[in-house]
Amino acid sequence: MRIAVCVKQVPDTEARLRVARDGKWIEEEDLPFVLNESDEYALEEALAITEKVGGEVVVFSLGPERVKEGLRKALALGAARAVHLNDPVLAGGDAVVTGRALAAAIARESFDLVLTGSQSDDLGWGGTGSVIAGVLGWPSAWLVMGVTLEEDGRHARVTREMESGMNEVFRLALPAVLQVQAGLNHPRYPNLKGIMAAKKKPIDELGAADLGLAAAAAGSSGSRLELVSVAFPSSGGGAEMLEGDAETVARSLIEKLQREARVL
Amino acid sequence: MAGNHTVWIVLQHRDGQLHRGSREAIAAGQRLAAAIGGAAEAVLLGLGTSSLAESAAAFDLARVRHADHPHFTHYTPGGYVGALAPALRAESPAFVVLPHTYQTVDFAASLAQASGAGWLPEVTGIESGEGGLTLRRPILGGKLEAQLRVRGEGPMVVSVQSGAFSADTATAGSAPIEPFPFAAEAATPDREILGVEAVAGEKLDLTKAEIIVAAGRGVGGADRMGPLRELAAALGAEIAASRPVIDNGWLPRDRQIGSSGQTVAPRLYLAAGISGAIQHTVGMKGSQVVVAINKDPGAPIFNLARYGIVGDLHDILPALTKAVREAKGG
Image 1 (cartoon, rainbow over the protein chains, first blue to last red):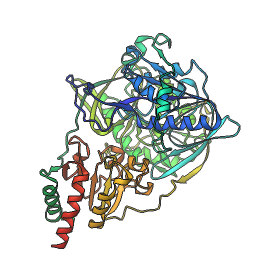
Image 2: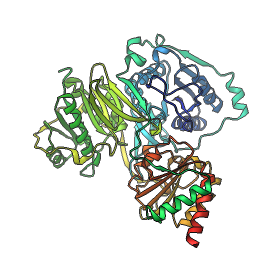
Image 3: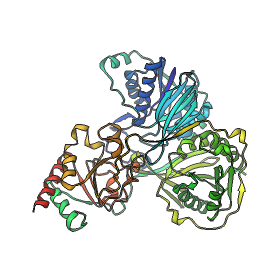
């Protein structure tokens, strides 16, 4: 079984964010980037499947040079190869143009399954995988919480999260694109052996021309959405902030909860 | 009909009921239509769903179009995209509005891809001013809000965030019901639905709790829950958590609050180390009083808290436990 896994590098969710001077994005200098959380679960699921039934995992990512760090991590975890869509022409796209670029890269090879996270922790379009599926003409599913391959090797039984603590279970035909939800497995950590092995694994680079994509239809030029501005949300009234050392704020909070809010 | 000003609203339903988000989508669709000087209309795909089409027709819409067919017995992306995409291509409305749900996001971007449309999820605001129409949505886990402008040719598929457009603001009216044109052979289900099951372990009912002490990723580990447990014991509170804590296995899944967990509205909700992403806050924003403790002063949880403390929860929680014990003792 050959599995493509699409990963994105995103700002660390713990990082303090600053709005960039032009007000259109965040200041990326000195910002720590990590692999997107649900993509890590997708990678783990792919590695677990190939360990069980054989095959290999190829990891794909679109982004600038720094993305190689994330790809190296995926290789250290067990992916056989990486493909880096590294071209400014492809940058800044919405889910549709980004999905089309990834689909074009995936279509250069033959895969039985594409796995990716359900949503990125930065822009959170939550649809890049569905676009890839649409381009490839494959079925897809979002918020996947479980995957079992059937013995015929041509179908998968998929558990998908619904609202209010319910899951939906269905069968679909392979090849397919599955967008996994965080929490469906326990992602492994890279070990020294894996990190050393990753140094020898290839990272292929592709640009828009390799994918047959016209510059006008790719990246920010081809995107249907334009970011006008980003800002911290206006605090609707906001919290009364309590200040002082731990003991002072603790006493003050309990007193306010008793006398002012009257909930204790 | 390129460049027309029509707004489609695609309705979601289950078990013979319109999803509550469908009415919010109607409210948002009416707002969008007014902003672009066009008309809103609804599309309903189902089987034996005439009564739902009638309830949609009681809103101020140009028409409600209904496809009643066995292919829509269950929702599947193949059925929905196969039915909607050809009409979307042919009619090219300016917008297609969906409620932002676990069902709609499953097919919306495929629909956009198949119809030459764009995809803009989780819209929380619609503003039309001198610079034209802009749409607002949260990004980066709700820490920031983005304003986006739509450009280029073709429809834009948008989903509207739960609670952002009140269903009460949807205008009533009387709309004609018409058949929705689709080719059954193109709209075939691509999933064999086997069933629906409750997530294992969902037993504990947190909705009755008067006080909830909830932990987020910032708590740091299963072995670092001690201060939280002690404070909960001192307050007589239930312990709960946001999704990352559950996914990491630090607490069992039946203690999860949020869109994929339980929805609670206690008298007091104390959120420790929870940033306040919308997936969590939809499950607790009805709480009477929210207290937020977070290292990051920019954490969005402070926006819906009544009291906030910036600091390390591992310092603050033990101090709070001590203060609670003193207050109760004295």
